[in-house]
Each structure stands twice: as structure tokens, then as C-alpha cells.
Length: 225
Ligand code: ATP
Ligand code: MG
Image 1 (cartoon, protein in one colour):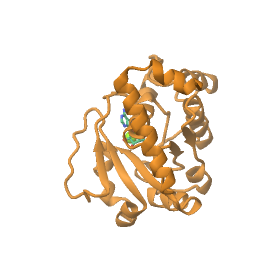
Image 2 (cartoon, protein in one colour):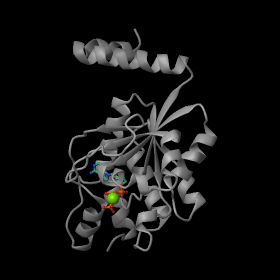
Image 3 (cartoon, helix red, strand yellow):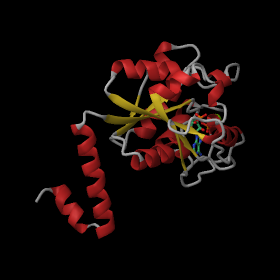
């Protein structure tokens, strides 16, 4: 008996069944040549547990084999705002995701530079791996403006859009193409990067709002003071 088989024997029957279903669903997708990968775009200034829980929930519910975090160079709606240097945001994202072997970080937006339009991110990922079914994960606040994003109609062709709930934002489906947008309620974590930055500026702790390594990285480089 392999270690994973033995581990499964120890699990409660409902968990075991769910694992089995997920595994057979994954095998089915692979045998059809379809791989499902999530994309979580953001400024990640800094990355926090709200981002990580959202990615983890979507990965579980949509049977994704992995989630790629894509830190933006400049987020179009945040142009003109002061943001930590891209390399710091990239490295904090790497640190935050390092312990999960199904989370990865992509430099596509940072290396392309300029304004990071989701359409261009997805087109580039799609060109690199045309066989993959892409799932773009975004918060409810961002979803509200998705129709104003660059090339919105093409965006829906490149990826399924998964809108995740965020405390303080009620999701409305109005006008969004129902077949390409799904909504998912995730355990509410009232954490935002803005609040983390404000806490640091005013000397309040950010422990447990962001991964430990990110707290230490911010301290080491004196970010957000
Ligand atoms: P800021 O406060 O600076 O806007 P943020 O916390 O919203 O930062 P972003 O990098 O802008 O972080 O977010 C990237 C994506 O993650 C967005 O789609 C956003 O809606 C989503 N998101 C952010 N925080 C949460 C949260 N606590 N729960 C669910 N989704 C979140
Ligand atoms: Mg935001």
C-alpha cells in the first residue's frame, strides 16, 4: 500500500469519497487532454491570506491542477498610485506561495512592463500553453468593472472568469455573460493590502494577516513605512 493510499484509509469516508471523485475528475480531464489552471492577478502590495484562501478555494471547487499568481507591473486602475517596486512584490508572492506545490508565480506581467491588462496576460499564457483551460480569479470589487477592462469580450473567450466574494462587496451578476462567469463564496477574510500598508505605517501588527515570511520580508526591507 502506498503512503497516499494508507493516508486515504485513515480519512473519514465522506472526505475519502470526495478525494476519490476529485482524483477521477482530474484523470478524466487529463485523458481528454484538458488541463485546468487558475490565474490570480493582482498588485500583491503586499500579498495576504485573503488572496491565498481565495486561490485555494477556487482550486478545490473547480478542480484546478494549479493556480498561477501574476503580480502586475502597473495595474491600469491603480496607475499614478505609489506602489512598492515590482521585484519586492514578486518576491513576497514567491515567499507566500512557496509552501504550496500547486501554487506558482509568473513574471509575465512584470517582464512585459507597462500597464498590465488582464487580456494581454491571458493571451500570453494562452499562447505559451494553448491546451490549457484557463480560470481567471478575481474579487467581487474588480468583477464589477470587468466590462470596462481592455478587450472585455475577448477576455471571456480566453478564460472562465471566477468572481470570489470579498467582505463588504455583494456580488451582482447583472450584464455579465453567465456562461463564462462563475461566482464563488469563499470564507470571508476582511483583509486588504491597503489595510496591511496602513497598519505598517501606523506601527500596528500584520502578523497572521499575511504569511510569516512576508511579515519578515517587509521588516527586512523596511517596506511601507
Ligand atoms: P488594495 O487594497 O491595495 O486594493 P487588495 O487587497 O485588493 O489590495 P489586490 O492585489 O488589489 O489586493 O487584489 C488582487 C485580487 O484579489 C483582486 O481581484 C481582489 O479583488 C482579490 N482580493 C483581495 N483581497 C481579497 C480578500 N480578502 N478576499 C477575496 N479576494 C480578495
Ligand atoms: Mg484591490
